[in-house]
Length: 112
Length: 274
Image (tube, rainbow over all chains, first blue to last red; front, side, top):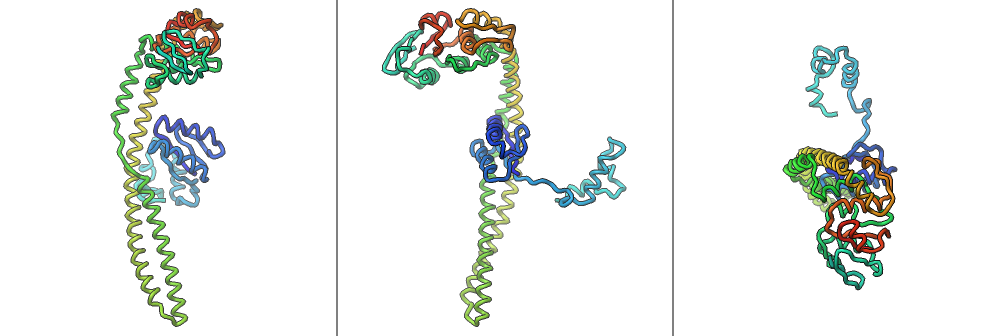
C-alpha cells in the first residue's frame, strides 16, 4: 500500500479531497494521512499531491506484516508474555532479565 | 468609486448597472482586484470577501459574517494576540533543505545501469561459450566482456554510493518532517484560536447583527445567537453589510432595493446594483 502523510494544512485538505473523490483507491484514512491502494492510480494520486505540495507530502510504500513469517518466534512469544504480565509497572528490560525472552537492546540491533 | 464596464462609465457611492449588460461576477472580481481598472474603489476586505456579492444562490455563514462585520468595525478578540504569537513561532521554524527526489532518482538510474550491464555481461559470456564450442575466435567478445565487466564494477560502486546518499538524504528528510510537523501543529493551534475569536465576536456582536436584520429588507428571525438564525442567506448578508463598515462597494444582484441610493442608505455603504 502507499502511505501518504501530510505536513501542512493545504496538503491535508488536498488529501481529504482526493480521498473523498476517489474512495475506491483509499484503503484507510487517518486524519492527515491515508493508505492508498498500490495501483498506478494510487501512485498518481500520491504523486499529484506531492507535485502540488512538495515536501509537505510524504509517500512511503508499506506492506502488511506477517509476524509468523517475518518475526522470530522468540520475539512473538516475548510480546505475548509481556502483554500478559502480572505486574503492569514492570518495564520490559526487567521482565526479560533472567528469562529466555530476548534482551531489548539486542532486539534493537537486529533488523527483521 | 468609478465604474467602467460594458461601455458604461459611472461614478458615485450608489451605482445602478441593472440597465447595462454587466455580468455580476465580472463586477465583483473587478471590485476585489485593486489592479482592475474597470472598478476603481477602496480595497475590499474580509467582510467583502464573505458577503460583498449578494445574490439568490449565495450561502452565508452567519457566525463568520457577524465576526467579519465586527472586525470591520475595529473589533478584536483576546485570542488574536495568541494566534499572532503562534504564527510568529511557526514562521521562525526553519526547515532543513533536502532533495530526496534527486537521490531517489539517482538510486533508480544506478540500479538500472547495473541491471543493463549484468544482462550485457551474461549475453557476452554466452556468446564466448558458443564461439569456443564452435572452435571460432572469441577474442572480440572476450575484449567486450572485459570492458563490460569493468563498467559493471564502476556502476556497482556508483549504485552503492547512491544508496548511501539516499540514506543520508532520508535522514535529513526525517528531521525536516519533525520541523514540518511542529509547524503544522502550530498552524492548527493558531486556527483554533482564530475560531475561538470568531465565535466570541459573533456572540458579542450578535445584538448589533439582529438590529441590522430588522433594518434591511427580507424576512428573518435571528434568534438569540448565530446558531439560532432562521432566514435566508441574502438577508443575513445584507444585515452583515449594514452592521459592518465596508469601503469597497457591495455588489447587489438581489432585487431587494428599488434604487441604488436606497440600498446605499440602508446598507450605509457604497453599492453597485447589477
